[in-house]
Length: 235
Ligand code: SF4
Image (cartoon, rainbow, N blue to C red; front, top):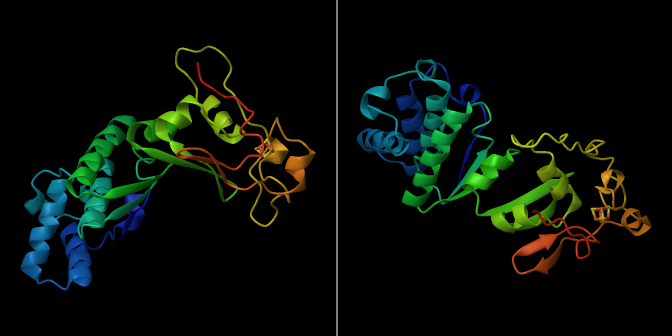
């Protein structure tokens, strides 16, 4: 299992070449010699489509662009061939074009290594682009779990519906939906449903006790008492 973080400049050590950093990880985890570590570091950079990988091992993080630094960070994470990569907002600091390139590279790498990717993001466009399944969280809890198409076509939880409606559409002059209120701070969660203070469908039963995460249909679970009777189908 491996993890890649949001901001590559705070994750890479500016005082060491990227070759040093990748090879150190490989040697610590596998116990292999220098020559093998160097070969595997080059393979990892190649996998991330970093040109002239062998020569670039001698470069420092500041000699890479933002997008390339993020690729280096992914090469670092993939160097030991993990079965699962946890990618925590890895594209947030990048512009849209570089973000799309990075997602393509990541998709190819996951296929080549037969690796699962757990992608943590607030960007629904990225979710639609790269994910097979989606888990929506609110107030520290899973509130909906679904296949990506099902989630976008027919959200079952009022918060998921609000999230989808808050995305601005370029061809839509209508005012953007804004969900009023704030996420409760940890330690001051409501005793009932955590979403109740912001939910248009909340009733006394919702406020009385926390709803369980329950299976609604095959491959879908939702933490909402009224999920079965709400219909948020998209046009
Ligand atoms: S359980 Fe009630 S308050 Fe919570 S999301 Fe469902 S309808 Fe809204």
